[in-house]
Length: 337
Image 1 (cartoon, one colour):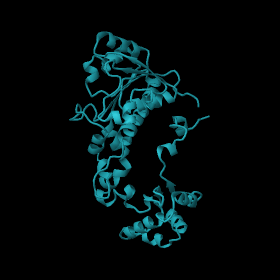
Image 2 (tube, rainbow, N blue to C red; image 1 turned 90 degrees about the vertical axis):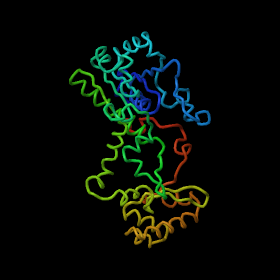
Image 3 (tube, helix red, strand yellow; image 1 turned 135 degrees about the vertical axis):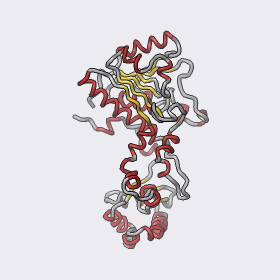
Image 4 (cartoon, helix red, strand yellow; image 1 turned 90 degrees about the horizontal axis):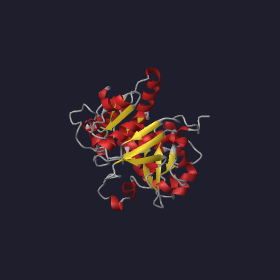
């Protein structure tokens, strides 16, 4: 793959997930990334990290987000450390930070100081709530941003309890991925204006942006949240997971009647088509799907639907889904040649 960001230098002050993921994407696109760590604490402290291989890996040799980057330790609370960072900023294009609003300024490393050192620098500050939110300085994590954005209200179990979907939505999608989009836009703008940009990226606002299409049914069309929120969250029988005879799981994603018809044919159960037409028959459809998928092993259902447009796939473990290791950005966006 060509390296579209070759020659771009990035400084990453972040340590959690959003910033390191953003700089990892930039590194995979060819940028030269330098991670600046605190000499007193190279990795964040998480409760339970000793028993959690993912949490304990952060900042270590098995940290996937550190691949392709170089690191240096600077004490940003010291004059020499701050001077070293400003020297680094002078020859860099992007600086990524996850500090709470005002922390960089308090260190003497805020936007004005950085812009004075390098007018072409792009500063991307990833925060939970944004610099101007009433609770901007409050601590938070992915679950808090999901809760305040309204997204967590949409992700519930069968009993109505909000369920946390790992930290993919806030940290990685609304945080890291949106940061990359904003940084690339700022670099493009810099080519025209020759000036850097200060990006204030709120993960809570980012989640709201990700929800634009989903929330329109309530905020624009006036439908109650309860009337539709579970459709893509397991309440639709043909958009759910089912256990198989050997303890495996099959994922069914048939939203459209044409796909439901394919499933009905494969299961030799034509009645499914009629049951899925109205929600009052959905409980009967679910029970029928549960019973039928429990009759055979996962391999049987995979073979049955593999060559058909049924939107039926096995639920793979991480080891099964990534037998050769985690895919790079090349796999996601293609070679481009």
